[in-house]
Amino acid sequence: MVDRAKTRDNIIPTVEITEAGERLARYYTELAKAESEKGLTGYQRLDNDRMQIMGVLTGCVAHEDWAGVQRLVWAVDGYLDMQGYWTERQTTSQAGIGAAQQLGHRRDEGVHIGNLGTASRHLGLVTQSVDYYQQALDISREVGNTSDEGAWLNHLGNTYTILGKFVQAIDRYKEALAINYKSEGQQRKVAYLGGLADVYFAQGQVREAKKYYQQILDISHELGDRQNEGNALGNLGNCYRVLGQAETALEYHQKALIISQDIGDRKAESDDWGNLATTYRLLGQIDQAIEAYETALKISQANGYRRGEATHLGNLGLVYRDLKQPKKAIKFYKDALTIHQEIEDPRNAAMPLGNLGNIYHSLKELDKAFDYHQQALAISREIGDRQNEGIDLGNLGNVYYAQDQFEQAVEHYEQALAISREVGNRPFEANQLYNLWWSHHKLNQKDQAKHYLSQ
Image 1 (cartoon, rainbow, N blue to C red):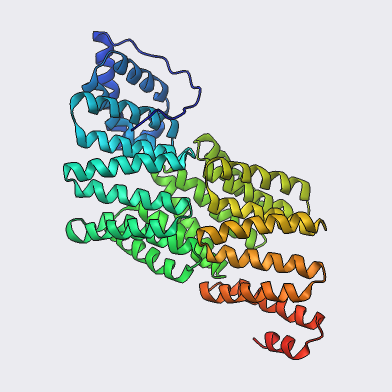
Image 2: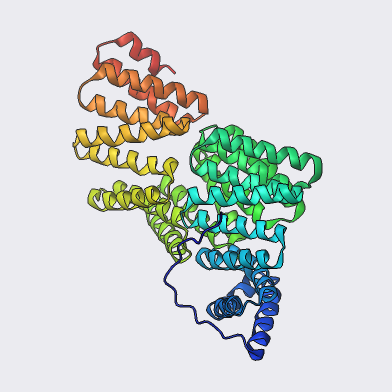
């Protein structure tokens, strides 16, 4: 059953619902509807009244004005979602659930429960969000709403992807696509294709993911769906970056950022700044990378987007590692790891573990390095993340090489090479060939060394 999720200690003034209070509730309901239709400029206007609106909603709940609660919740829901005010969306979703139950609106109850799942997921309560989405899915099936059913299957797929449960994620996306094929249009197809693409990207199957993202971009552009068009551009940028085409990636990320800023999608804007920063870093433009990461971090922190916050902290660690400031880098990595562990995000927790292993390697603390890389490899294998499994194997090979254990190094480099070819990561493949050449050279195995050098 639904239970109350934790919220920030914001003090929201409760507005007493008298006759004047009812007029105020109607005023804010109409204001939220009108301003939300304007997009970004409207959202900025609503920011000035957000706390007052939440106070009015609290008053409506206390007064048991359930119809008023429903109207106000629906009016502000899109604004809170787009701007990333997840704590407030928790509150409105909980109020909506109570109102729907009192009014006997079963379908609305399911939608509010699902929206509570989305707010909880973004606040890091990932396992709890699975329960909310499952409840919403059950209600959609009970009332026979296939559109909602597909939506909640898609959200379950997204959440299982975050948890690294890729088999369950793919199953949910395929169920959703089957519903889409029977009864829904292109808009929902975009969401379900995006989920599949995300899984393939997470598993290191970048070329397969790229095909799906391109389909999404084409459909979204045709529909005039700017939000999904921007998301597709950003995801294609990530694919091009992983495939070694950084300049092309930069162009895609810049286009994505323009869209997210235009439509006021703060979560996407945070992601786009982070993607730009990563590409700047690969291009050696370090000052631009730091500035972009810090911008992304501020947006994530302001909106309670904890996964984004952890990602940007970890990436700042990479920059300071490159700048030969290991203590600062370690601090960023550990902060990122803490958040990923707190929000039950094992796939992304493996990243700072591997980075900590690399930096302790550079500091000649090889036992610590080995331990962190082993932890990262265990997670990558457990969740089926082939790309990061290859990276972790290569990192362990580097530790063995530094300890002059060249045979063990070769064993790990060969496994990493095979995975890099499987997932199509050409830069990493080249790196493993080089490592194998050096390792066989150290073993005085000149023929084997030439074999890898010639590839």
